[in-house]
Length: 280
Image (cartoon, rainbow, N blue to C red; front, side, top):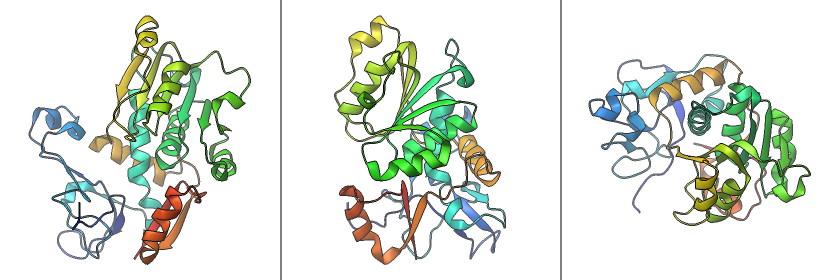
């Protein structure tokens, strides 16, 4: 709700306070640090959590942003701030990929993986799966403008709809839903193998889609994945800096003044890039 400054995926330079002059990428999730969730390393579930660009914290489209020092990760000199700003969306996929590894489930090198959605969240999940050891990754993305870029980035199998593929009836041990609408949940619950796992990141709509009877009869695990904890964010940033998440040339950079037009183009399916960075 207005008035509110948006933007929660950001990197920049500290201009005031301890560490002035440092180039940093920003973990936008601010937590209390003392509750049971924070003390157990699941700070993303802190009951008092706040995230920039949602009340009461203003977001990164402003000229300045105030953050706790513990939310800042130093960016090496050879990494651009534009690429460092991708840490947040990639961390969501890193967290989801880590959550897919549970006792009784196949290790990533042995698993067939399906990622639903080829935007920044889905792509981040696919790149994280690959970085953490997966070899067999299929991405479903309905916008054909993105297909060539997705294939080039990770060597993923890419389909507009899974029905295009032959031999996919055997299903997938790991399914990550980066969209989160009824149709994608229906696809996830239909294509997960018996004993498989669905990791749900997307927040498109709240209800519908899951085949709970099949999931019960086939013991398919369903796990919600909300953002990332502090350790996930730092691990993602380090993987990005070390080149383990690929060349990161998949974003476009546009002036902040183009923001309204960019949002409109994304909604209309006219943007090939999984992520557009708005730069002041």
